[in-house]
Amino acid sequence: MILENDKPVKFIGYPESSMVETALNFVLPESKNQIDVITPELFLELTNKSDYQYLVAFCIDTDLRKIICDEIDNLNLDCITYVHDTCLVPETCKLGKGVLIGAFSSALYASDIGNHCWIESYCLIAHHVNMGRCCVLHSGVAIAGKTNIGENCIFKFKSSVLSKTTIIDNVTVGAYSNVTKDITKPGRYLGSIARYVPEQN
Image 1 (cartoon, rainbow, N blue to C red):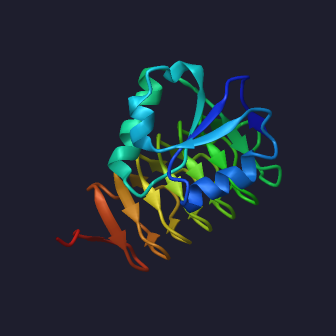
Image 2: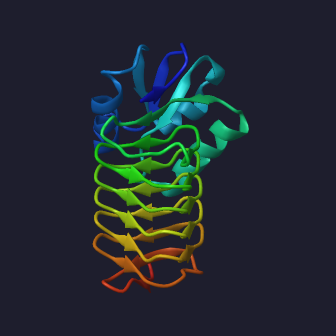
């Protein structure tokens, strides 16, 4: 399923990145529109932003990604929303604009996924999950039910979150890490029981 209008599409990212490649492989065969890839820097320089519809397809710089998402939402620009045909996303699940959900993922009952969230293949978002804007879930992430996640959070490959957990904004959970209790401090969390790990200079 793809939701789009008749405007040309611009993927905001870097041509060599895996996120852009994923987006092109999923969206290009279904879209009726021309699709171009522009860097975040070129997007910010555009003077005719309202002439296009967008998909944010990068996460290597989370601060810049948030700037781009804020610009899109502040200007109320059009975005495409894409859900792969193999996904389970019932009508009770609310999707924001600019969301991409890859193949064989599920976002279950009464979950709320914010604008510009990127959910790769084989992810599970269980019932009653509230996810803020600009979050990225890499392949194989599992988030249990009745969980609240802030904005601009990144969940790396096969990480997981226990049920009834709250995570604030600007948190990165490392690959194979498991969040078992609330996270109240922004930053990076790693481990089989995820713990805060300071960034190294």
